[in-house]
Amino acid sequence: MAIVPPTAIRPSPQIAALAARPIAIANSSETDPDRSTMRTPAAVLLAAAPLADAFAVPPARRRRPPLARLTTSAAVDSAPGKTFELDESKNQLTVTPISSLDGTVTLPGSKSLSNRCLLLAALSEGETRVENLLESDDVRYMLEALDALGVPAERDPDDPTAVTVTGRGGPIDSPRGEGEALELFLGNAGTAMRPLAAALCMGQGKFVLDGVPRMRERPIADLIDGLTQLGADVSCVDETGCPPVTIDAKGLKGGEAKISGKMSSQFLSSLLMAAPLVDGDVKITIKDELISAPYVSLTVGLMKKFGVDVAIEGDMDGAPSFLVTADQKYKSPGRILVEGDASSASYFLAGAAITGGTVTVRGCGSDSVQGDVAFADVLERMGATVTWGPDSITVARDPETTLRGVDADCGKIPDAAMTLAAVALFAEGPTTIRDVYSWRLKETERMKAIVAECTKLGARVEEHEDYCVVHPPEGNRVKEGVAIETYDDHRMAMTFSLAACGGADVVIDDPGCTAKTFPTYFEMLGSIAS
View 1 (cartoon, rainbow, N blue to C red):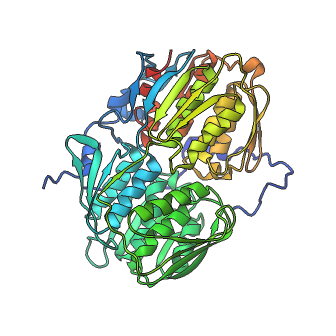
View 2: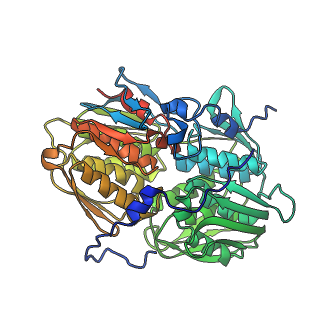
C-alpha cells in the first residue's frame, strides 16, 4: 500500500492564528513555567467508501487525507430523532436547537484501546482477533502502518469492526532492503506515532515517521530522550522536539531510562509497550510527575492480557518506576474485545445533564479500565443523577435541579474535560477546569481553542497556563447561530455541538473532522435528540 507523502512543514492558518494570541497566566502556585487466506488488508477495507459519503464534503474543503468509514460504529435504541443540515458549499453543519436527549447509545470502540490492541497483537506470538475495533482515521493510520510493515491484519467480512492480526512474536523489522528507509505517514494520530516510534526501535531497519502539519507541532522529545537512554538511534527535529522521527534500529539490550511525565502519559505507555521486545530488563522512572495516570494503568492492564506483567514501585500520582523483566514475551490472548470509548460517552451524558433528559451509554461502566468514565462523577457533582452498571452509565437530571458550576481537577480526564467546558455554559456560577496543560499539546492548541469558542457563544473565560475558568453567558443563553471553528480537531466539533442544547442553532465548521475518532457522531446525536 502506498504511503501518503509527508506534508510541507507549516502550521495551519487556524493554529497560527491561535498561537499569536497571548496566554493570560495567573499568579498561581499551580502554574509551572518549566513545562516545556482471504488477504484483504483491514486498512484497505476501512477506505472502501470516501469520507465525503458521510457528510457529502466537497474534496476541496477537506483538511485531511480522504479517509473513510464503512458502517455505523455505534448503535442507537431510541425513537427517531433529528437530522442536521449540511451546507456543502461552506462545509458547515447546522445543529438545530435540542430540547432533550433521551435514549440508549452503544458506543464505538475506544481509540486508545483500539490502537494499543492492534500494536500488541502485531508484537505477539500467534493470531489475535480484535473485536469492536474503532472505525476512525487514527485506527486506519495504524492499520496502514502495519500493512506497510508486512504485518497481516485481515478484516472479518461479516463484521467490519473485527480484525485478525497475525503477530510477529517479537520486534518488527523493516521489510525494505538494507539502507533504505521505510516512510510511514501517520496523520495526526498520536496513538500511532508515539507507540510505533518506540516499538520500531526494538527491531532492525531504517524508518521515518511523519504526519500532518499539526503532528509536526506536537512534542515527542521526552519519548526520544527515553529511547536514546536505552541505546536507540532515534531522533526528532532538534529545534522543535517534534516529528518527523528518524529511526536506525539495531535492536536493544535493555537498561534504565528516566523521563518526564508532565507533558503526556503516551510517552511512558509507548516505552512500556516496547519494553518486552528487548533482550534485557527495562526500568523506566518518572523523574518529575505523571499526568493522565489512568491511561498508563490502561496500558499496563492491556499488557497483562497479552502475557506481560509490569512491576510498579511508588505512587502513580507521583513519580513512579516501572520494571519489565526480560523473561516475558507477548502471547496472543486469542480474542480481545475493545471497550466502548469513554471519551465519546461524555458528549451524550453531558447532553442529558444539560437538557434534563435521560441517556444510557453502553460499552463502558463501573468495570471500565478507562479513566474518562470519571466524567460522570463530575456531572453528579453538578446536579445530575448518575446510575452505574458494569458496562453502562445512565445520566438524568430533574428539571427542577439547576446545574451548578464546579471546581474540578481534570488531570486524569483531559479529553472529557473539554466536554465539561460545554456543560459549564449552562451551569449556575463559574466552572474551573484544572490541570489541563496537556490541552496545549493535543490535536490543536485546545486551551486557546476552548477559550475562543466559549467566548463566541457569550461566555467569559479566564485563561491560565494549565487551567481555565468558564463564566457562563448571562441567563445561560448562548448566542444564536454562532459558527464554531473546529481547528481540524474532532473533539472541538463534538464538544461544541452541545451548545445547541441551549435552544440556539450552532454551526459546526468542517464536521467531517470527527472521523478521527467518531465518524457517525452527528448521526448518533441526532438519533436521540428532540
